[in-house]
Structures are given as C-alpha cells and as structure tokens.
Image (cartoon, rainbow over all chains, first blue to last red; front, side):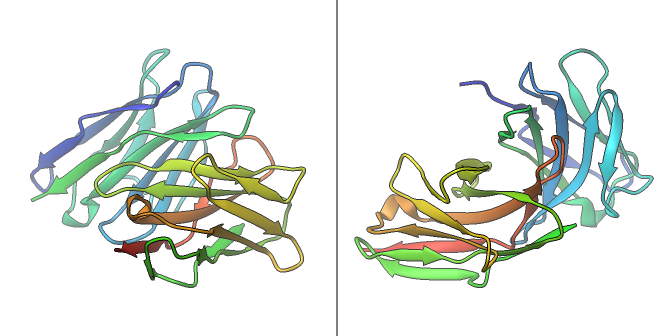
Amino acid sequence: EPEVTQTPSHQVTQMGQEVILRCVPISNHLYFYWYRQILGQKVEFLVSFYNNEISEKSEIFDDQFSVERPDGSNFTLKIRSTKLEDSAMYFCASSGNSRSYTFGSGTRLTVV
Amino acid sequence: AQSVTQLDSQVPVFEEAPVELRCNYSSSVSVYLFWYVQYPNQGLQLLLKYLSGSTLVESINGFEAEFNKSQTSFHLRKPSVHISDTAEYFCAVTGVNAGNMLTFGGGTRLMVKP
C-alpha cells in the first residue's frame, strides 16, 4: 500500500534556528498538506498545496513558515526561526481525487 | 468553514464491552466524514470514511460509524472492544471539493481495561 514518508522522525533544534521537515507524498496524489499536533492537543491544519502553490493556509501559518515542492517527489515545510511553541508533531498528508487522505508517521520537532 | 466536536475526551471501557465515541460536526456545505486512529507514538491511520451512499460505514477491524445528516453526527461504535483498541480516535470533516483540508475534532482517548 502506498505510503507518505516523512523525515526525520525526530528533530531537536535550538530556538531561533531554521528547520526543514521533509515529506514524500504518494506519487499520484495532487494535493499536499501539513498539519501539526502539539502534545496532548488536537491535530491542526497548517497549509495545503496544489499545482505548485499554496491553496489554503491557517492563521498558524505565519511568515515564519514556508512550503516548497523542490522537485517532483519532495514536499517540505520550513520554519525560519523556531520558537519554543513550535515544538509539536508535524504531519504531512496527501490526497487524490478519491478523497483518501494519507498521513505520514510524523516528525516530532523539539525546540530547546 | 467546518468544525468538529468530540464530546468525550476520554472513554474508559472494559474489554469485550460495547463502545460509542461521539462526533458532531457543523458545516455550511456538504461534507465528507472520517475517523482516524492514533496509537501511542504513531501517526494517523484512516479507520473509515463516509463519502456517499450508505450512511453506515464499516472498518475491517469491527468499527462502524453512521452518518446522520439531520443530527449532524458521525458516531463511531464497536460492539465488543479489545485491549488493542486502546488509542486516540479523531473525527474529521472536509468539504466535498477536491483539495479541501481536513478539520479535526479534539480527539477521544479510548482506554480499554481488562
């Protein structure tokens, strides 16, 4: 069964540093997403991406965040200057026309 | 815009007992509905989904959910739970247009006791 792959599984970074979280969506999917889950809280939408541009973003997704599809397979989330409150599990997801949203296993980001 | 409410943050239940996890949604447009399960320290796995057709949908491991449009609900049920069902369960909703984001409820922690 096709999978969404995320790397790394765990990233520790110092406050103020830039981090890039990487995702390989399912190859024939057209829509890509990033979500985050702060420990013990709900899963929150960050951004959706289609046709090489952001299609929707939440108020969480401020100027510190950016997304990119640098080649035909990767989809990245960059946090320019991390804050303690950015510590969370970040999930990448992709979907196609069948409306099946497939999630990766997540990257746990710890900002110290 | 949509929103999802899961009324129970935790549901303790004994093994082999039935369980119902409640989910209510609000939306101004037609929706698709999903249940995801998250085992400890793992990602989100799709349990079942309602897109159209029969309002009762089932998963391969004995869970079922019924879409009730008049009550705007999509409750998850299982007639007999196992210890291995212990996990966090998230209800989610999206609009029917392709590419719409999923909106999640706050989650319900199902704790199955022996």
